[in-house]
Image (cartoon, helix red, strand yellow):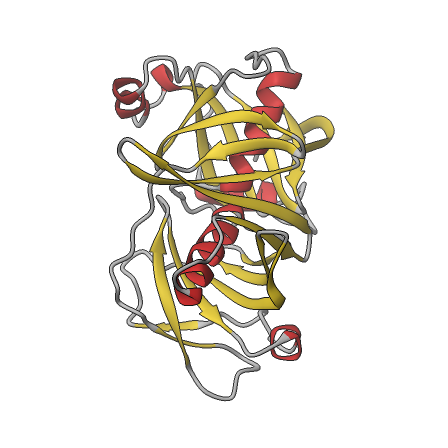
Length: 292
């Protein structure tokens, strides 16, 4: 049974097992990923980040066609071993790992492109750690109903796609948010083909302070369960609340999650509106693990 090095990292409590595999030589099956992410019998994490060169993974061809400078690909797996398109907190932790291990450089004012199944994501340094441009977002306008343990009736949600799917649900206040039991899978109707992360949000009072929108959020991530933070989920939540707030809503948001605080910024580009996520990324410890 091979022994491989690993690193544990997190972004506002959203934690990951990081495996370096530059040449794409490690074939991790779903059961192995789930075992590594198991909090009792493994290392523990909300997901796994495999650090592989874009040229060494099949999905990397589309990435290199989009951006030839995207040398590194974030092969992200959920804690249950399933493949996911993207992870906003994971991209920042991935960037931290590349820089701290000398696999990449990021000078102030420059950009580090990272390949994902959701396309190329550009990372820059920020006051709180790193900012990642998540690109454009979409909504199909489906507005599914969401049932969750702790809510007396189903609530309408807003569907948002950031390269991975989300449904955002507004709640009445902090008491309702804190009373949710997210050990139970929320039910979405109609259920998206590949499932979705579900974000439950409450606006602060006042909603806008010093030009910045403020909300609280809890999230149930598909293939994982409730997590302390979800990067793309915070962006989806801010986009939904901005939409509900109407004309004059701010373009900058502060999102409080159980694991800390993240920033969201909407800004125009030549190809349409983009959204960026900013926040810390921390590497906790490294070691070796035996793969069954």
